[in-house]
Length: 52
Image (tube, rainbow, N blue to C red; front, side, top):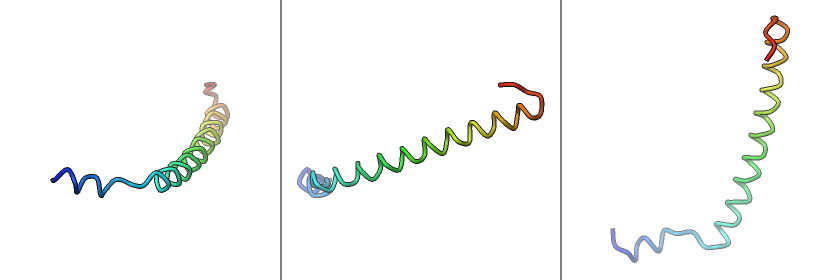
């Protein structure tokens, strides 16, 4: 691929910033869901007699 065509594929700084904002928020939500699920799993294991 030519160097020039690679340059055309790169997002503009504004597009990158918007995408990073969206992806960072999505990751924050996924981390929160992960923590909630981890707590639920630990609670369920505790109910079965397996303290974690």
